[in-house]
Length: 207
Image 1 (cartoon, one colour):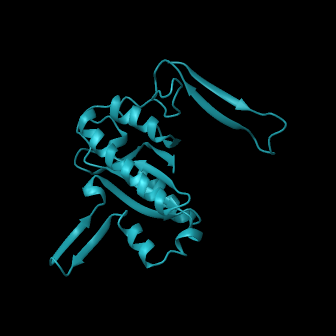
Image 2 (tube, rainbow, N blue to C red):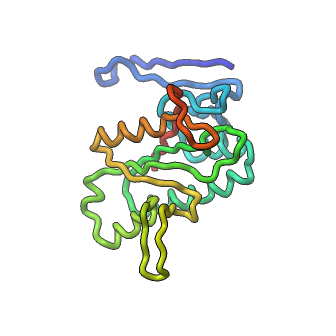
Image 3 (cartoon, helix red, strand yellow):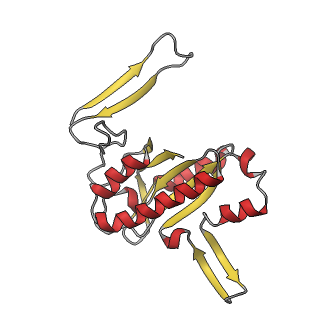
């Protein structure tokens, strides 16, 4: 594997320390469109290294469907994610997805869903009318749900038939973003228990 770090200090750039991007060679990360993905190589445990890593949907598909264990199972989840993204784009002029969960690992057990935080601007959602909020709620994981007809009480209802586990965060709320960064950086065992002291990375996809 060859890691190339390109540091741009061109004088025409705005004042800053530097801007940096990483190119991964020798097939270490996902590869799309004949170029190299910015998704870094996974650790020996099949996890993303610590940090929030930019990616496109194509790169995510290449790395965590085509090249991953259980690709046919993962393709079904990814198809649900693609439809989810289409619905979110219809509703929001701009948003970001933080993508996590077993889907973004090479664990031997197939993932049951893909975990998302939908990061949006409060300036947009505060102007939603009731119909828009209904559409938004249909994109989110709902907890402690009760319905009059049929008469049911559910602990948890996830969108896209349960293949997506999604939550909402406002980009203007740093405390909320820090909370989700902490949550998405945790490592769990096969039973869902948090492993103390262990951390991993996750992906960021612009819609």
